[in-house]
Amino acid sequence: MKNLTKLASFFITLVALNVQIYAKSDAVSSQRLSSFIHWYPAIEQVKMRDEWLSKHKQGEWQFTGMVTAKDRTVITPQADVNYGYSWFNISNEPVVVTMPKYDKYYSLTVFDMNHFMEVYVKPDKPVVIRLPHQKSPIKDAIEIVLHTYWGLAFTRQVIVDNEKEVMDLAKKITIKGGGGDFPFIVPDFTSAERKAGMEAIKSYSFKVKNGRKLFGSPYEGVGDMDRAAGVFLGQLGTQARYVDYAQDVADQNGDKLNGKDSYQLTVAVKPLIRNSKGYWSYTIYNMQDRYLIPNSKNKYVISSYTAEKNSDGTITININPKGVGKNALPTNSKPFYGVFRVYEPVDGIVFPKIKRIK
Image (cartoon, rainbow, N blue to C red; front, side, top):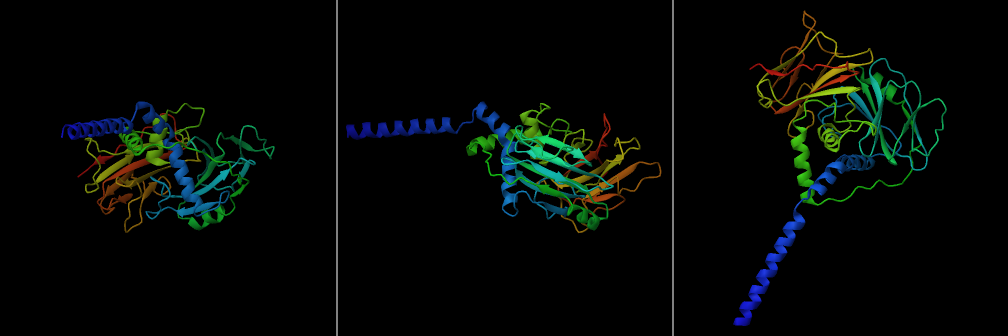
């Protein structure tokens, strides 16, 4: 009996030790938390790339046409543009992208796997994407140097009641090269590390009031948490000097936007855009999944191309459950957030503030 008591005591001690060891191994160190935040943009880039490659071939174009609530390619999408995607691998040779001219806004953004980017608005030359040791196959070209084998060529063409024209132009966008096969490798993280990392990123993200620190090139010193927040809030977002963003999650009293009340934004007469290339838009999204809100009107965005002005030159945007009123967007009674985008913004831009009116 005494031996059985000792044996039972031994097993109890062993179980207790195992629990302690498991608890320690399941805990998330600050170093691993920082590592997950650092790698989060790359993890999301790999996820997006692999999903895209399950339906398309690398080095070819896929165009969305007008984005609607059915689209699930990227969170917080811009609703009045034709997006173009082409994932490529430049381990064997550079990539060359050409785009036709268009009288409205269009741009080419090139992302590496860490979500660093370079942007060209209305590029007037071929764009060569290469590694540091590679030479450009074209003399007179815009050159972008990447530090990852894999990358994404991403185009935006604004649609203003001219989807057919835009889609015809999209057929003339070309990409040559990009058929390499060298890998891009991200580290593994435990479920506890992922959970803790996402909690930190989400907490930081919903305190962000504008996108000026969220996106950048490798040369701009964008911090890991800012870059992670940018990917969480709007993967494939762009530097503020090209596209400046403001996010609305609460009204003038600090209350969350609930979707059942009515809200307004008033865009002042003072210019937001620095040149004729740019425009502004305001889009709302479902707070729950961060995609466009389905509605019977298929209305998701108001822009400087489409908005109707008031008699004093200002523009009022109405947001309510049914999308009633001038320049109106329907929430379908869903809790929402809004994103105001200005393409080619002025310096020191002052964004309009959302207000609950009833």
